[in-house]
Image 1 (tube, rainbow, N blue to C red):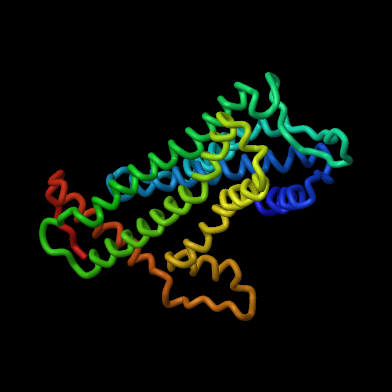
Image 2 (image 1 turned 30 degrees about the horizontal axis):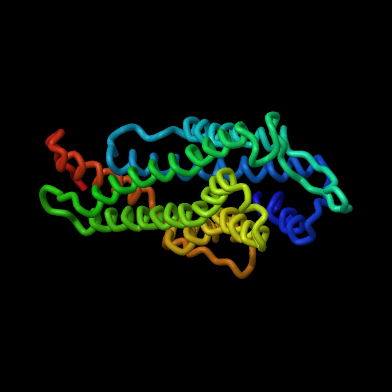
Length: 288
């Protein structure tokens, strides 16, 4: 959605230094960018919390489909809330002494870099869209990694149980890569807006537009990397991807790699039984 509704149009805007798409799309493109980015960030944070609950407290009842849909709905609601200023305050105007049109944000209390509201918004954006998700994901995946790599089981661990642990470790590694790339992609973008508020003269520096374009594209490209990482590091995702495109003649899905119902039940029971023994919360006898 970011590439479809935002990146291409902003590339044309920055390339030609004029906005040819009108007022309505000036507002829509910025709104779509912020809302989709926020929804993506909140989704990553929700996934990290879900992984934490599944591995650290596996006996707790998992979220139902209805609850999952509610979480997804709230990620988009919060994204829309954060994006509303883009819809309300972006406007277009002709640059004096030129025939070029600018698409820019004008806050009620002043222009960009001179507005307290903009400063509050940018700080809130950094806290809720960067700092808070990063902290939540680091804490969640640190706890999960400690549980999967350094905890010791009581009694004999079967080959099947070891396979379960190995698969969970692969998922955690994948999500750590996702979080790391998220931090790398968004750090320059957040730092740029803080610097331009405290040092507005930066915006007049030579080649600043090209620098901003690089920073902007790096941030927007974050959503592109996640499916690549999932496909590279997660066999289940690769299989699901193939199933979606199985109608194509050159895409084949190997049915032998699909886990049976008994294997899925075995997976849950074996891990849950091992977890109960390790925590000494219950003496249980598992029969397989």
